[in-house]
Image (cartoon, rainbow, N blue to C red; front, top):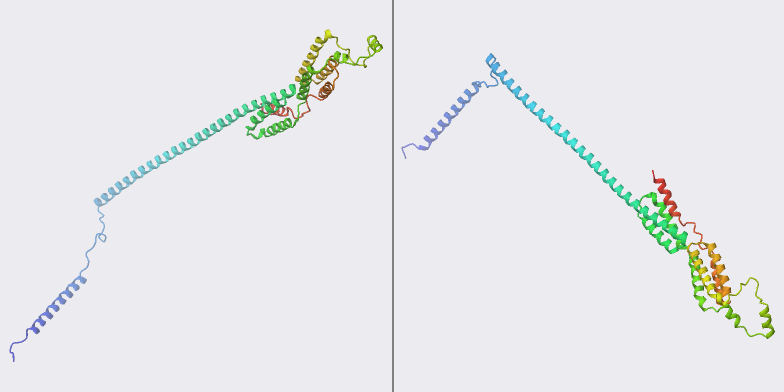
Length: 329
């Protein structure tokens, strides 16, 4: 049997004593903390009401107030400057808008002026062409020339876009259609008949040659014809051989007179010239079928009016002149 005691129980007792001591110390420290009052803070401390402290506080407050006043004045100045700049910018924007409106009006006026100048040129050109067309048709009956001049006038009027010229463009279209509807120019037909007659004259036999080519009659009949000359009533006396050249010159002059009458559209003068031409033809040439046909055709051309009735001729010119007078101040 071992006589020495075990070391384990001895170490266990020492540990228990140490833990108990620590617990006692901790409890004492907690009790002391709970019982001790907390130290007063700066906020809980009583304010310093001494005159020096009050002066310092008043001085500090005045300095802060002066600082705030200066900052407020600076901000107010900045606000005023910003407002002034805003007003200035607004005025500049308004000025720019007004200038832009003025420029736009000027450009519009320039465009209107340019269009008015172009329209004026077109109107003058159309008026000149219409005058030429009327004179060609009225004075000389030149149908092709009247149509060409009216077409040029229609082209000039076609460039007018203003609604006030719409009726005028329609009028020139109707007048041009009326010119084109004319089938044949009576003056041209009459000139053709004169040309055909003049080309036939060298082929016609003379009147005295036709008389000499008759079959020889008996002696008694020749004696009677020598004593008495029988001819139908109204027939002109035959031209003597010595006067034949003068008679041909007179016929040529009558043909030239007829041409002048055609050129001037003088229907009565042309008809009278055709009558005198017929008289000279009876005295100069034998009454052949070719001559009778030409004389009949020429007489029909003389009986017809040289200028056909065309109520719309010149209507566009009258309408244009009326519109110009109405537009004049």
